[in-house]
Every structure is written in structure tokens, then in C-alpha cells.
Length: 315
Image (cartoon, rainbow, N blue to C red; front, side):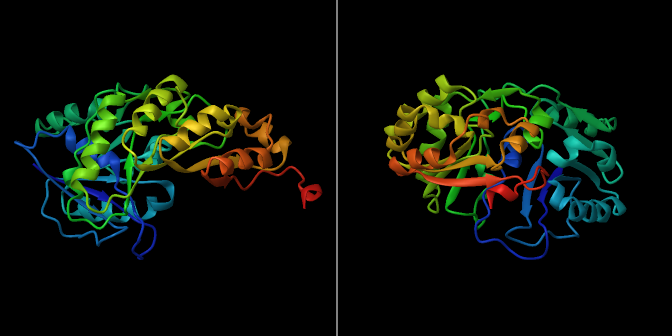
């Protein structure tokens, strides 16, 4: 089969800082390339052709790109081409997505991808493939050949862990993975990073796309100590409670961390509690910023808009 992986965009503009879509690199790595040919089109950096001669179209979508994903899906289904849609939007409201796709993937796709390809070839694919628990990702290998000659950012994504132990009310990760989390083997991640800087001339910074870098502190420490030897620059995201361990923040800096996205979420403790953001219950944002600044790590603060406790006393 010839398989097209498609990543739709919101609007028609191109991005100068799009990072590689790792989900497709996982699926490509699990695809028998002796039997199947794969191509990737990412609308953030290039046009998605609407007349591809393929056997299977696989679309990933977030909620903000869902409308565009449905347009693309309709186009190919009308041509008689089988369409799969996955991603967080599909995982959260599969009933809607089923109206636009022949098959919907709910949750992580690794555990069902090979089975789906066999069943599709045999003419009996399922309408929905669901992975309730996170699969074992310890030995996952990403097929980055999919990104060759594509103009992605100098910031290169790498996944160490997936999922998060917190269950914040607003969070997609908590809703899909339900407090579950899994990690790749540290040695495999280190080898992947070495290979990235060896083969990707654009690469300057590694961005760990983990939902929470510190879901397993022991494994995070192991990774940081290994990263020290590479002398690279990297960034990540996590919850603000990591600042309670300044020695850990110091180690992050020593291992090459230059930026961390932190979920401040709100400045009203009543809103923090309403969203069940337990890691922020005992917070001092000013001191947290001071600790990261002391160790030369840029704080990328994120906030959630829409909680309605009165904030007039804070302005």
C-alpha cells in the first residue's frame, strides 16, 4: 500500500518554526517498508495535495485543526480512498470524528497500528481502534527519514516520557491518558540525540515534548546526568513543583537546559483549586521565577483563560 500521513494546519499561512510531528515518525517506524510506501505532507510548511494517488490517508488533528482535517478527509473519501483520523481531538470526541473517517484511532496508536494494516489489507478493518492504557514505549524508535529535506525548525523534538500523573481538570493529557505515564529507555534516547546532531544540520536545540518531564523523578535524574556528557542545549515542560528541589533545577541547567515551560495557569488560588492543579496549591510564582533565573533557565509561563472566580483584587 501507499500511505500518506497528513498534518493539517489552521489557516493558509506557513510556519517558520514548525517542529517535526513525532506521532507519524512512530507509525512510520512500525510500518513494514518492504510492503508499504509512506509519504508525509505537513500543511504548516507545505501544501497538502488534494489529488494524491494513495491507498490510505492518515490524518492527525487537534481541535483547532479539526475543521480543516474534515475537509481533507471528505475530499479523499469521495475519491474512494480509505481515511484514518487520530490525535487528541479524535481521542476526546471519537463519535464526531467517525462522521468524517472510515477508522478512528483513540489514544496512542502504537499498539493497534500493525493490526490495523493487516485487517485493512484483509478487508475487515475496525471502525475504532482504542488504546486505553499507554503502551510500552521503552523501546520505541522514531523513523526520522520521514522528515528528510523538509524545512522544519532548528528545534528538534524528542520524547522521553508520555503522560502525566496529575489530573488537572482542563488538560487534554489527563483526559486521554488518565494519570498514566510511560518512559523510553534513557540509553535509547541518548543515542537518538547523538544521531540527530550527527545527521540533521539544522538541529541546534532539543525540545523534550514530554507532557511532564518529571513524571518519574528518578528516571529524569538519570537522563540529566547522561545529557551532561553531550554538552547540548535543550528545553522541556513540566509542573512548577519541580522548583521545590533547587538542586534538581541546578542539574537541569548543568545538563544543558535553557528553557522550561511551566504551567502557572492562574493567579487566583480559588481557580487553581477549581482546576485541580494540585502541584500549584502551595505556590510562590515570584520565587519560582527567581530560582530558574538564578540557574539561567528561561521560564516560559503558560496560563488558562476561562475560570471565573473574581480576580479584581489582583489587578
